[in-house]
Image 1 (cartoon, rainbow, N blue to C red):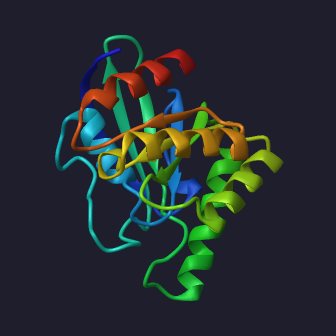
Image 2 (tube, one colour):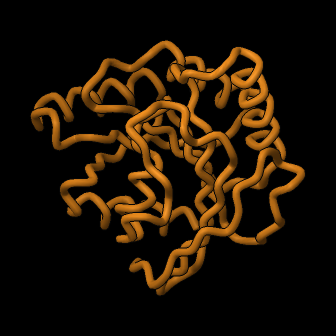
Length: 191
């Protein structure tokens, strides 16, 4: 599968304001600053399609992107990150409520949970996985920032994800585009 075009659709504070798109949709989940927006930019080969920042917690809305391919179009939903962000407890609680509502009520093909290859799997990653499994929401994992660690460490982290979560795990790096084809092939098989 090859991407022909990608466009930003909308930023929405909640599910109610998200348009019905009638396309296969994938929700991107992960800790703040794990690389979800960079993933979108790398996948689509557009450096400024999704806003990126070095400051955790910059994604505060549900951001929808339509991806047109040579096979079938699909939607990526970049959701606010969980975990550390310099925002109030009230705002974090609001994000949590909107995130849960979106995941429970939106007709998703799958969620994609991002894990940073440089760090151990965090407690909030495990809690998110437990919540997804409890609610029977499909998920696969993408291990980001793989160019910062050895191939041996990446292999160990993938094995750990498969063992702990029971999910497929794909590798990804914004610096090395070889991973893009593998991710697109996986998504293509799901849609």
